[in-house]
Image 1 (cartoon, rainbow, N blue to C red):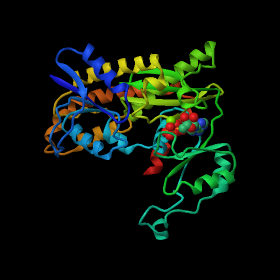
Image 2 (cartoon, protein in one colour):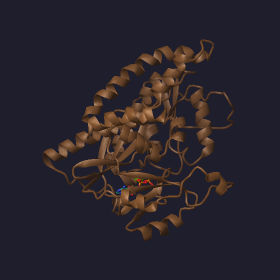
Image 3 (cartoon, rainbow, N blue to C red):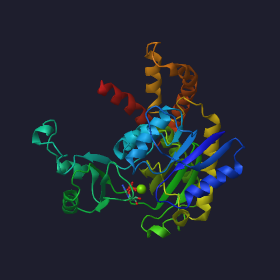
Image 4 (cartoon, helix red, strand yellow):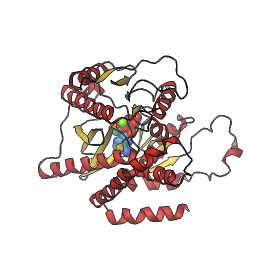
Length: 371
Ligand SMILES: Nc1ncnc2c1ncn2[C@@H]1O[C@H](COP(=O)(O)OP(=O)(O)O)[C@@H](O)[C@H]1O
Ligand SMILES: [Mg+2]
């Protein structure tokens, strides 16, 4: 018997529907339930083959519990290590590397110094050249936390005056300063299991309960092309980041979808906001993914998904490690060929990028510089 658990917070509709769907369609040796946690002890396995995590972004105790569970062999969805590491600025940089267009973006030092630091802690940091930053990004612009969500502390700014007024409110938050995309279409796309993609027209300017009540404006051949491009970008981003369950937002300008927000590993899946048809799709896709992961799960091994960004490095490190390393090393040779197979595929996808030549050149150059 393999158990699939779902760990969740205040949401009400998705968890029960997910559990019911898995139990309806899974073979008799797989069951789903709400995760039950009591005493959490280091290096003690949970009895879940798979855990769908919908809440650890808000509960650090759960995040630590999930990392321990993952070490002991639970397939945690999404990978709690990657989720701990990623943030919007890195994700944007990776998108550029993957050939997915994103708005021009700068990272800003926090307005206030972090607690327990002083001026002396910042001797490496030059004074901000605001003129240069404004000239590069332009107005209107967005300013939003580099690690945030739920539209918290997201500002749309029309001038340097508005910028400084907003920046004054941001305290110790590290913010992104980003070109505002004046879009004709906007989309929110689920990506589940690194393969199932649902592209949902979304109108962020509507009231929250009406944001999915909209239609795609681009029609005909251009519309078909746009959908295919977005699907390709969604898959590239999710393979790169290594998310099993995520949403990607695009703002479309001049026919080009620019990725806006694509690290949403506990995306809204409430029937009351996404609507019945989208809800049905996500319940079905999530149940199928969880069942497949439960079937593939190998107790005591690493059953996480790692992004193509992290993976080659992790594999190289394992190959170089002394033979006496971990008893788990047996897993490495098995996993390695799969990874190698994945790499050329990702490379083959690259030519579809907006400017393949420029992008391909940029990558090695940056790497050389880093040395
Ligand atoms: N560069 C941008 N251009 C246009 N709209 C943006 C941009 N950045 C953010 N937005 C708008 O602000 C909303 C919230 O920003 P987002 O990056 O999604 O933050 P969060 O992670 O808090 O949801 C987006 O759904 C979008 O409507
Ligand atoms: Mg968002």
